[in-house]
Length: 216
Ligand SMILES: *Cc1c(COP(=O)(O)O)cnc(C)c1O
Image (cartoon, rainbow, N blue to C red; front, side, top):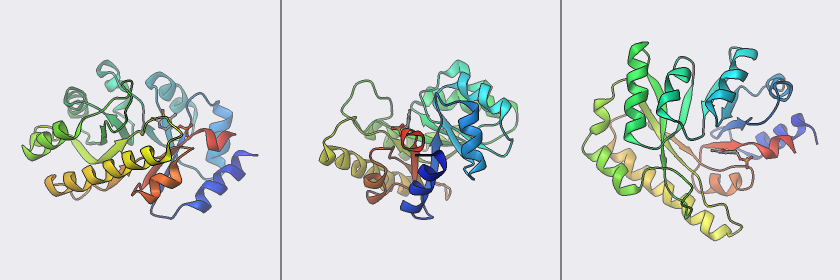
């Protein structure tokens, strides 16, 4: 299959309300350029170094999303151009993004990554910690951050029921968070990857992060 037909298959299977983030980690510049030529303009990378290297060589109207774990010392490199950071997994990271954004007088759109899986290796806020942060309006300490939604990664398992429950759990947290946060931009639920994006959309996702299904 070609990148073009894979892309069309995915786009034709989702509604206009769902945004596709093409996950391009480990893929070559040629493959990214091909995706771009097919009309895809939203790319997700999970490592800062790789994102920077690709950003330099590709068209400037690409929206770059950082989707992987972000170290505080790397924040300054992406803040000037990143369109959305999906993986804000702590208040410490949020504070650093705010600080770097302030320096260049920008407001950065982020998603708070929520821990929904049953795997120790995954990152994110737990529900209690997140709600405490929102209810006490702590996010107001970070004026250069625009919290536009939540992101989650389900457990890597063939157990569809479990993955579904984790997606529904994220949606339930999204609704609780939406009631607390005073931000009309809070709209995005980023969940679902190549193997489970259809299930994720059924469970309320409106932003999917798809990599391998585009390039297989
Ligand atoms: C790699 C990755 C994806 C895409 O995974 P595929 O199974 O290749 O679609 C989505 N989200 C994150 C955070 C990733 O690291």
